[in-house]
Length: 166
Image: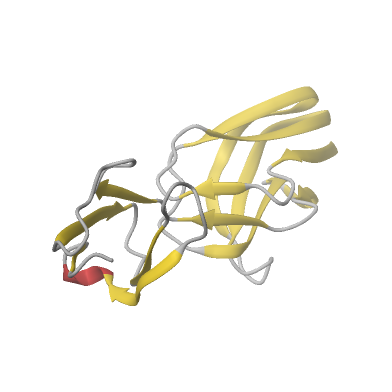
C-alpha cells in the first residue's frame, strides 16, 4: 500500500494537441509497483486511461511522458494517477488545465510588406481536427488587432483571400 501525490499537470497549464514531450509527474510513498494514469476532459466527469503500467509508486519522485496529447479541445482537463489494484490510492490535478490545438499562420510571413489595395492570401495550419472556425485579425507595427473576418470555416482548406487590403 502507499500514497500518490500528483505534481504535474496540477492546474492552469496549457498543453497542445499532439505534443509528445509532456510529463505527468508524481511522488510515491509505499509499495505501489505500477501506476495508472488517466485524463478527463470534463473536470472529472469521466476518465480515459493513458497507461496502467507506469513504473513508480514506491517512495520517490516519478515521471511518465504522455506519448501524444489527444485531439481534443478543452479548458476542463485533469490528470489522475492511481494504484490499479487499489483505486482509492489516487491523486488528481488540483485544478483544471487546458488542451488546445495550435494554429500557425504560414502566409503572409510575420513582418511581411503587404501592398495596400492588394488581394493577399492568408494561409494557416492547425493541429488536430477540433478547429472548426478561425478568426482572422491583423496588426500594424504591434498595435491593436483589427478584425479581417470572423468565423472562417477551417474545413475549406485553411486559406482565405484577403481582398482590398486596407
